[in-house]
Length: 249
Length: 318
Image (cartoon, rainbow over all chains, first blue to last red; front, side, top):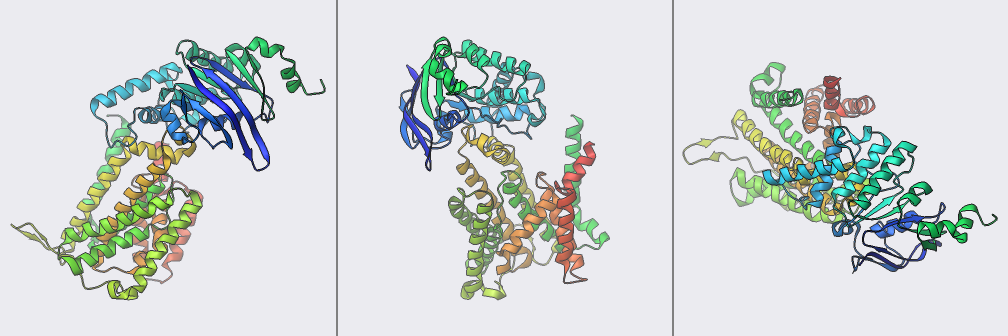
């Protein structure tokens, strides 16, 4: 069954059409990359998926359920987690505290006045599991804001994973990273996808990362759908090449 | 225990030791017990403001409204309903807290400066009601004709009215109870969502936290704490006054929190000590005592943005 089904989605800001009539379907266990030149509407598209703002037209179904009007925080509860192009974390809290907040919300403890011993122990175990998954176990007591950029990204992904998502939305996970860090994050995403059987949609500029990871690729250009296919098909697609290289080429 | 925990224990011992023995050491420095009661009550108010400001990241500039409603609720209950100190406290807390909960529901969608502006507006509404409704509130002259009542335990009575030291300890016990509730909330999973909202609202929302609901709960709790402090303040003075609702008092509470240190749990109490003591000493010398507070707050904000307690903390870890 498809996890995500987007139909004819559009977003207008005044007279600007940022996203125009986009449809796509993401299957369970798939890793989909969304690419396109700057200004293609990728991040707007993500913001529509995650409920950051409402679409002007069209609909979004998640696990077969229409979520077009569902507010952002409830989409998270349904199993949709995201990261941001510019890392969004709690910089003045420790790595442990960052992950703890996410884990507690996922366990539906957010309104609880206290936890009993068993709940607290279980919570700690889950936090440690999540930290191990992103290789941050050695840095639990460090302030997240003081970590290297790559580790901050890993912490943000860990927070999303702590939510036990059905669908993970990653907005340019390797933005601003060096080669080594890019390699490590790519390996992490690959593990989550292959070993964790996680359905992932990611926006990415680094084509090495895209072609290494993606099962299928969707290409946007100037807010509109341009092409979709396997990495091999997209690499051979002339419309995609001209969008990236400029119409003159 | 780690050295961090020892340090924390030492701080708690100093604070509680200082408060418990205040009636004995304050006279040595020219203080008096009633001043101690005032510091505790205003400190509690500043801590209630900071519960919202320092731990949820939401600035209310109208919190005196809940403080003043607590004071009037307490005074009116003592004057017209029954001669009972606990009843007065309960009435004041409920009046201010429930009013805060209702208006808070209208407020939580506002952010930042807009939130602060609307809180001022609501606060001033209550100020003018108290000012105009003379038949009930005594108007500009304030509400008189009530006094704190002895605590009656059947076997013995504790005279709170004439014995300042007994009353100080009564206030201290009330203070300790509310502060314990605050600390308890802040250490709970809910308290951690407050910190999350303070640190990064966008991240908090996309972790699945309905932030309007959580801000409303934090705001409401803060209003109940504030109203309780206001009810105590009516007992301290045996008097309630429209100025207890005025936004300038709201500003005073914010100043105490900022001076003492917003990110520190005990910061606002220290701020209240500095504020009230300076007010008490300087106002006996000059009516312009507020300009000295003003200079002090400018210096603190410029040089120690984390407040006095923030500065002390930095020193102790450096």
